[in-house]
Length: 429
Image 1 (cartoon, rainbow, N blue to C red):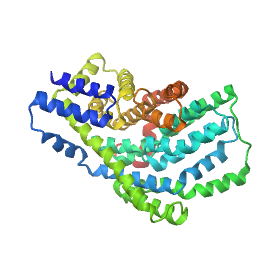
Image 2 (tube, rainbow, N blue to C red):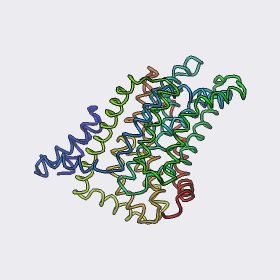
Image 3 (tube, rainbow, N blue to C red):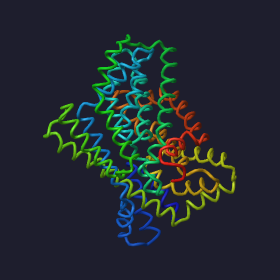
Image 4 (cartoon, rainbow, N blue to C red):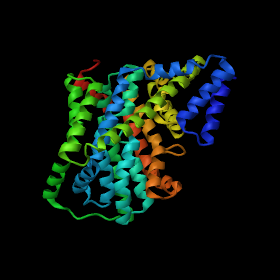
């Protein structure tokens, strides 16, 4: 009865278009009132318990740093640098879109911010150059999923808070898979561009490449600051986020001069609202996850999977299938909080390294951001392009196939995610 109330209410809210965080909250309250007969004071208590983690303080810092850099005109500089590097190839603006997202990933850490920032510049630009608007929106949505894989990454921070895995190791574990994801999308874009004879720009010369690099230098150095801070061990991930925000403020106001001191309060307020919404989702999802645990749903899932097989590779396949389906219907952070601890226990039970599992689990759910019906990045890019969602879904299919191929490479070749953190931090440390 309790499970029926919980999931029935959740599915009903999803069907009528209620945001995922509110769906989780309503279904949790319905369970507490109609089945558990518990005082509603449990609800805020569990929300607080969900966000009461020092690691989660990274999130507001990295969001603020990304907002300051983007407000300082960083998007245009990164796109200019990417265009100078790959814009001369057939389908150059599409390749620039992906390359720009890979460079921007080291600043934003969130897919939606990346889709909105890059999309606002690239989608109108690609449309003006003669690319189909659905293709422009699709490649922007697909490329935005690189953001939460290449460090810094908000989902990786959540994973660290849930599991106790070092956030620094998680950041490094996502670097190579993120680059592979970007390269895979570039390959798909190139073949589609050759097939459809999409335009390309003439080579602008080494001089333009150098000057565009200098223009983007201070923005790219933010990534170096974040990674350098984590690798040095001098600062914690949370302190690194604060340093990144200070650096972004100095660059945006005094070097790029894209923002003024008057702009900073609004940027800080917008970043605070974004952070609050994200942390509210974390807290409410924790309530939902606690109810699931009390109903022993995670234990049932784990027992069922292990009863089917104890073969590590079959378990990896089953987890991927499950997360691909979940990602189609549930927001990434909520899915991580609800399912990650359970699936981590299953994975480690058959000998899968926790960091390896966490990497392909996050990558899996990132792909969900571009799959209907709840693909948030699809909605963002379709809205920017002012084109029907159905046409974007059709155009994104080849990119989804390429992303899933990369997902399975990362899933079945552990060293793609383990080599870099083991090299930089040592094995098993």
